[in-house]
Length: 61
Image 1 (cartoon, rainbow, N blue to C red):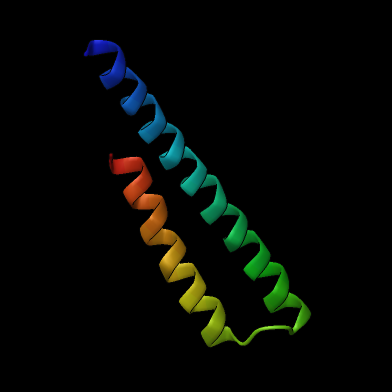
Image 2 (cartoon, rainbow, N blue to C red; image 1 turned 30 degrees about the horizontal axis):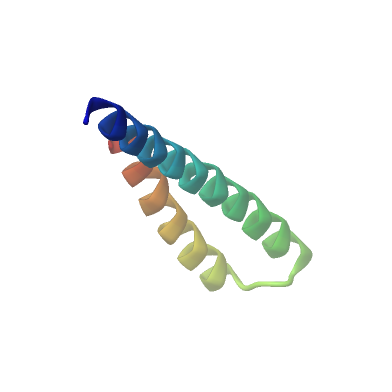
């Protein structure tokens, strides 16, 4: 049972890390899109708000 629990814990940690890196990448892309005029300031803030929530959740767990 311990091995299964360790596996699940490792998978969850991997998911959180992946979510964190995805959110960081999305924020960076949103910044580039904003600077290129592809998205509006409002869209940029919406994307960043979501990404910040994901980043905080990934770090709190």
